[in-house]
Length: 297
Image 1 (cartoon, rainbow, N blue to C red):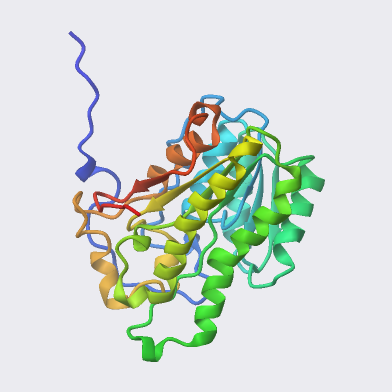
Image 2: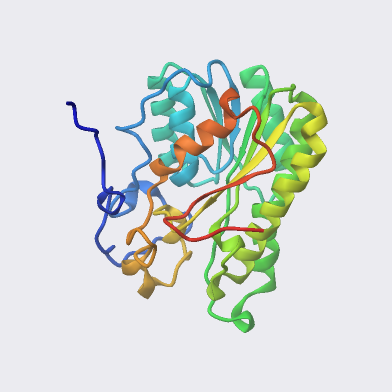
């Protein structure tokens, strides 16, 4: 009898400590040690998103990069927003999309600019000829040890990038989204179990979870599904760009039930599922990919 192929989740991907490292803003995936696994070698498409037209924010690295590679290999064309200065990472993703035989549109934009969301949607429509899938993934995460040391300007910018831009992008995209479209947000386990040093970031992620469920209620009568993904400790450039206290970085993710940090590649199948027609009865849900940490509202 043929034996099943089983893998121990505790032994997948990088299981050891991380070396101390940091980068100047913006942090680049190409300079990380080890580099995050975004499914560049492992993800195999199965035609689940044929000819879909997708806008992904924060798509140059980490979770957005993994989603972009997977979506392209599933048959989608991708408009990829990234923060100016992250072109090196974005060009790598562009190549993976093109190698999958799909169109890539690179859109450098600073989501702190209130004009950016409308411009991103307009450029996506112009270049791809339409839009049916939004992956609202871009985020700012900057650690501050106490509220006394948390600049209010940082709070304003974190809210603008993480949640206000999602409102604006949906408003801009809605006139173009047909029935059957999918909107996927990236919230976080921080929405449900916040870390004290990520006060502003965690607050935005809680807002995103609430926004996701409320928006799903509004758009159900248009045939548009809205869901969110709540990652746990995932190895991405966000952690090196002042996202974690430097001294804590070697142990990052190792207090999870699976005793390691997650990799972006482990989230990509969830984004694919939520975008696809296979999730036709799934809306107003938050999917946790947390290594065991609980999520709830």
